[in-house]
Length: 314
Image 1 (cartoon, helix red, strand yellow):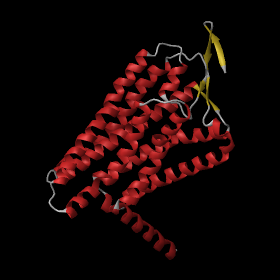
Image 2 (image 1 turned 180 degrees about the horizontal axis):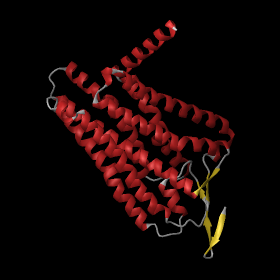
Image 3 (image 1 turned 120 degrees about the vertical axis):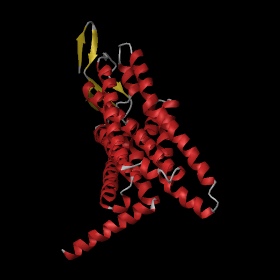
Image 4 (image 1 turned 30 degrees about the horizontal axis):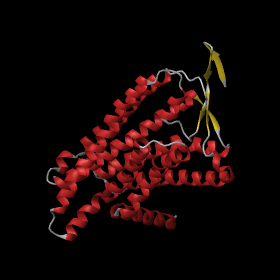
């Protein structure tokens, strides 16, 4: 597990403790997490399938929603399968390389969530505040360019950060009291100077998290100002309904993310807070859009009706 190099012990494997305080509830937690993972994957795949198959949903907002679903699937798959192993074994070892790979995809998927939520807010801003120019600004070419740029830039920047990360020496202890390899717990295991890594982290957070959040806030200030100016109550409700799902998703994601990183905590509190944006947000996103969005609900019903007709004919 450890090798001796230059008179100190180099860590090869890291022990993730998971939720050892709840060892009496191991099976219950395991099956609950397994259920959450299955529902998350199925829910997000359903959103992708519905948007892809329904012509009424072939708009920029729903195109970006499918990308959000892809990032949700990536985030859940990065965290939950290994978490199931950690819970079932009441703690599980992961190689240092495996831990860094998990952090790479975790950081990339979270950054993508931030960016896709941002471009969705910009889409709503253009649709509500500049409806006459919406079609010319938010067209298919713009959507494809933005999506490709986001996927490329995010994983390139996180890769550069992860390469710097890989040069750190880990010399014990080799225990992380968490259910996945997050940044701070990994840095606490390093016996190298982590100053540059922390500076890189701050530099990356600005374009990938803080700036997107600022754009979302500014967009919704303009959106709410425009909605308030609508003379009729019916008009205000109808306009607000077009962005209510997105606003709910943004609130849940950024609130949990802000609490965990702006108000750092330890132990079980940190784990519970981390559950919100790593597990619950990918689970809730498709539910929020399918339950509170009339267009999506209508498309799901239509798809299910067509499926039933096909089955009856068969």
